[in-house]
Amino acid sequence: MKYGKKYADSLKSFDKSKTYDATEAMGLVLANAKAKFDETVELHVRLGIDPRQADQQVRGVLVLPNGTGKTKTVLVVAKGERADAAKAAGADFVGAEEMIQKIQTENWFGFDVMITTPDMMGVVGRIGRILGPKGLMPNPKSGTVTMDVARAVQEVKAGKVEYRLDKTAIIHCPIGKRSFGTEKLMENFNALMDAIVRAKPAAAKGQYVKSVTLTSTMGPGVKVAYTRS
Image (cartoon, rainbow, N blue to C red; front, side):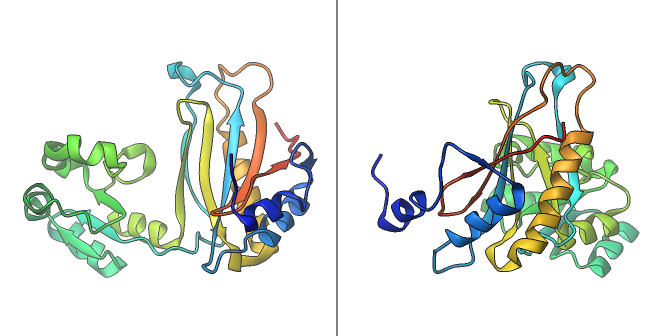
């Protein structure tokens, strides 16, 4: 594979075959985040479980201590008092059937997260085939189907992330921006890793955390020596 000059230079700054202490790895990632924009720092965790098994799923939500550095646009599908509460909590768009129709007829997706109340799931379900592939379908496990829509909106705005195992048994999750600096990013890193370890399925056998890698949007991945599992 042919790399750009900056990427190639970054590869020369550390040993890709070596694992580094988490703080040292974070420092290398930040030193090699050389793009002109504020790169996102991402955590990639490979787990020693079988994602094909229903009793070996890992999924959860977490409000990172220092947020993600990205302000998400929130759509709340609700009525009455819940709709009023969502507006007061800072939701960007609030409505009911008319919002579903807007998505259907105008192919409108001007939001990052959809939150709804249980009683509106029948309406939202009409466009499940549209929302699902885009990762926008509300789900109780992610806290986006709830009667407490105000709290859900506040958590998303505060930097809530969802971590979820993919088909290759890897969790990919953003933990902040380059501009956060090492200390804040490490706080987010530790909070997310602790959550993933706590979510270990009872059916999991052997080594749970197989590998941990930190990377930035445009930079190379740095392997982390992680033993708390």
